[in-house]
Length: 136
Image 1 (spheres, one colour):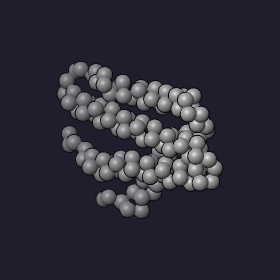
Image 2: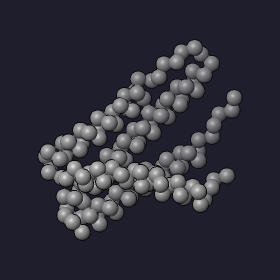
Image 3: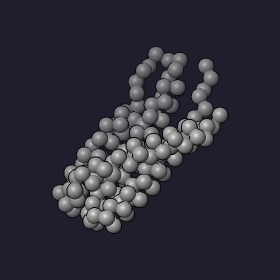
Image 4: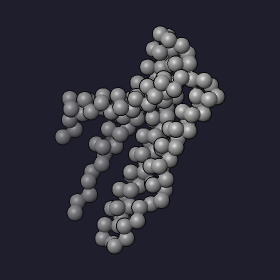
């Protein structure tokens, strides 16, 4: 069985991560100018939390892929515990960060939730880019 070349996928993952931060910063600046600094801060915090969550998920899934490739011929089917903890930890990170920042800095929760949407927007932009510029 031939190993899957992941270099185009890694480029797309890197593009999504960069776009998440870029879209988050742009949205935060616009929100701070149009609304308040707290709303802009909330959007920025949400975007950074989304970026961290994406990086953890990327790292965990890479670990699972390596483990499954290494165990392809063996009967052991155990997943690396670190990968599982990263997958679950992303949700704890998001909930904990939003909760603490809301309580301590009184940043509106809705603005942080909007910031979390930066990852979805970045994924859509990266997908459109891939459609217009296929890697072949």
